[in-house]
Structure formats: structure tokens, C-alpha cells
Length: 333
Image (cartoon, rainbow, N blue to C red):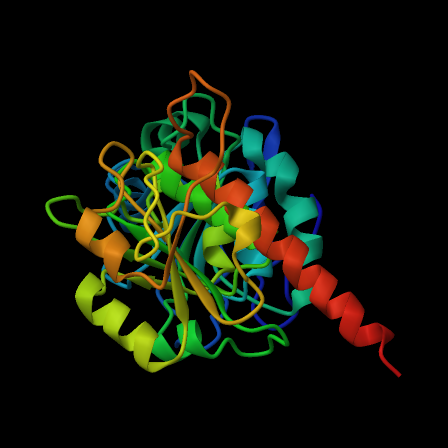
């Protein structure tokens, strides 16, 4: 058995045979910022579906409900790796018998980052009963997401570029929410906000489906969840962050209310892109209250793009302009 996930401070190096697999005795390792549980565990393999740990994983993964300690569930090697890299607090990592083969890879990453957490093991059957995917990889984690504040949205820490924020106003599909967050992060977004819009509530960006669709980006990007949209817009205006409404409406010439192509806008300063509900888009009054409106020109016969695809096009233009600005600044003597 690899000892990569073991620490000299708290790991008991005894092992037990279960079938053909070996599992280390459960180590209770201190989690940064929180006192470690000192409950005695007699074996590493959790074999009862009523075990407290398995109940928490089942609640977070299968039900998509945060635990009492505000943790969400992530499942699969890729997402657990992203959780480790994110610097979010890790409550515990769970392996199934078949998932034990991923332990060394994840352990090397954890040791390199210098973080500790409880490592748990269960059977393939019990893991399948708590997993949210059809073909689970046998590894999952409980993670406490790092929620953003208004200060994070307006003044991103450690970012040389001005704020570039995506506001998901009533985007209801978790897959779309995750894809938008992944796209925004890829093109340099500094923060995201999810908010209800009229009768449309925004999907939880930390639900299992949204986390999978974001490929872990939701654990890295500062996200402000559930703020009132009118208050948010007022605060953006006070902070000097320009709002751009992504419109799905037909183009109507109006000097007072122009509808511009993405490349006709200036994305180089502090900007918040407003993305509306999948079916209805943004309310007309919200578009009118924005500093600018944009619509992606498309071939005839194509009515619209979905929210995630439209965000990708718009944020690509933002990244292009900001990259050009950085290159111009670097070229100056």
C-alpha cells in the first residue's frame, strides 16, 4: 500500500486486509482552521450505510444538500484534484475499494500542498449508493466552498487587471451555471454572482451537477451567491463597475438604447456582464438600466445561442481586448 496520503503526525500505519485490497487504519488528521475530530475509529473500512460519514457524503452527493459544516460534495478524480488545488477547506476524502488505485496520485498532490484531512474507505457497493454519477470512479470529497463578498467582486485580490464579473441572473439549469463559470474562468473572469431574476431563481453553483459542469472552476472563482439583483446593480454602479447586458432581443435601431456587437464595446475597464434566464433572457427594464447592451450577430435562421455559448463568445472578446491592452502596456518603455 502506498503511503503517500500518510502523515508522520497522525497516521497509524497498521493495515487490514479486505478481500485482495489493503486499507490503512483511519487517520484523523487536523484540518486547517478547524479542530480535528478525536473520535476513535477501529477500522478504516466503513461498512454500514448508517455511518455518520457516509450519511454526510450521501447528503452532499446524492441529495445535493450542504452538510451541517457547510460542505458540498465533489466526486471523481478530476474534481477532487481541483478541490485540493483550490485551497478550500477539505472535510474528508472517501475512497471505495476500486477507487483506492487513485490514492497515490491524490496523495502526492496533497503532500505537495501541505494540507491534511481524514481519509476514509468504504465498499464499492456503499460508495455506489451515495454517488451522484452512474459510473463512479470511487473517490469523493467533502469541501467547504469559499464564498465571495462584495469586496471580492469589486476589487479582486491579487489581480492586476480590472474586475471582470459574470452575473448569472435567474440562470436555472445547473449544467448551464457550471459551464458559464468554467468559460468565465477560462477567459479571465475575476468573480461571479448568482442571483434570482423576477420569478426565476438561479441554480446553486455548488450543486453536484454544476460542479461537474464547471470542471472545478466553481471552487477557484470567487462566487457571491443569492444577492438581491437590484441591490447588486446599485452597488456595481457605486463602485464604478460598468454593466453590460447580454441581449437576445431583435436589433432595433435606437440612439437612446443601442444594441452593439461585442467588439463595439470597451471591455478593458471594470465590467460586469449580465446573463439572463435560458428561456426569457433578461427583463427589458434590466437591459435598459444597464450601461450598455450587446447581441452576438448570427447567421439568418439561427435565433439565439444558449447562455453558456453566448458567455463564451462575449468573454473571448473581453479577453482579446484585455490581452491587447496588457501587450501594449508592456511594450511601452
